[in-house]
Amino acid sequence: GAGVSQTPSNKVTEKGKYVELRCDPISGHTALYWYRQSLGQGPEFLIYFQGTGAADDSGLPNDRFFAVRPEGSVSTLKIQRTERGDSAVYLCASSSRGRQFFGPGTRLTVL
Amino acid sequence: DQQVKQNSPSLSVQEGRISILNCDYTNSMFDYFLWYKKYPAEGPTFLISISSIKDKNEDGRFTVFLNKSAKHLSLHIVPSQPGDSAVYFCAASAAEYGNKLVFGAGTILRVKS
Image 1 (cartoon, rainbow over the protein chains, first blue to last red):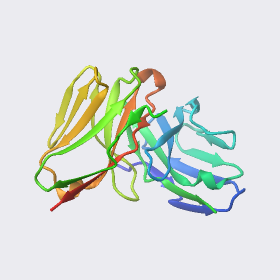
Image 2 (cartoon, rainbow over the protein chains, first blue to last red):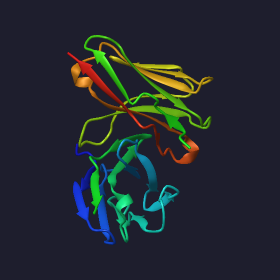
Image 3 (cartoon, rainbow over the protein chains, first blue to last red):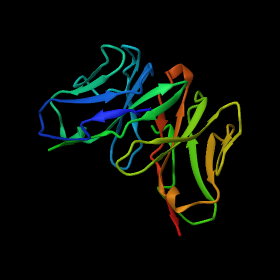
Image 4 (spheres, rainbow over the protein chains, first blue to last red):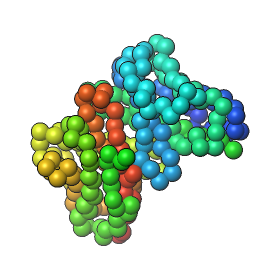
């Protein structure tokens, strides 16, 4: 079956702009996670959804970051007033029985 | 405060030999440990895992060992193949933290033919 998909694969934006990153999880997976991977580091947790609600958003770095999952399937990570330090690969994962399946990521570059 | 550490940034091994990748953790609440493999421009792919109630889990050429008293785990790949060349991430989770994964920085494995 289809895996986790993320769009766009690459996003280049200018400092101060708003961006939206989309994640389509594996059908039927109720848990969805967002991670951010900076160069030379492992992925870092941002936020976790169980169904439609954010069960844990403790990893969001500040209030410029927000994520939604209105129907319990597709999720959108929103970043306001982007900064150069936001440049990273944003990974989404969905989970069944504890195992997380990752998408290919969106590479965000803020100029 | 790195809760999961992979102290070797890279490892080079000859084809056919054993590859040993190491990982240390500090949080005693972690109860599940995983290894992920990552190729460039792809997301991490699950490789093997181990629960904290076990000390060894084997799947084909891959074996993970867990030493809880030392808060240390290792991944053994034998025999190593050129296709194993990738970045390997160690990750840990705890059920009461919602199973969010805490990753190490990764180890680049190069298997030379």
